[in-house]
Image 1 (cartoon, one colour):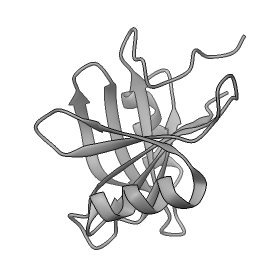
Image 2 (tube, rainbow, N blue to C red):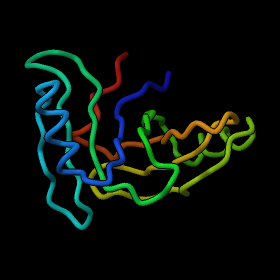
Image 3 (cartoon, rainbow, N blue to C red):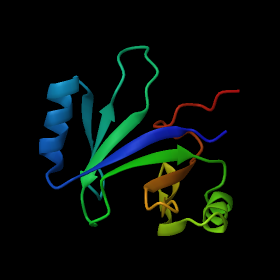
Length: 129
């Protein structure tokens, strides 16, 4: 069954947001090197199961907090989303080492993403049996 594996926080000032979540919740913050500035959030302590998070610069008015659901096929689940009355906000995008991401709105206007993880994606916990 697909599960939420990640959440993105959109921020006007990502560095300020990263400091906030670190200072308030003691979440580990790691700035990733890459073409788009992105800060990973470690939301659990050592050995604790937790959903991972990240912070990026807000680029669209609809961006807020976007939960990400792991799926086996971004294409198949994208089709299911549309058939069920959802709309695709950002079509499938390949993110090197992470996988394929599709962002969508449910029929109520809530924004989510689905992720088909790349093999060996270190940011998504292995699926449980």
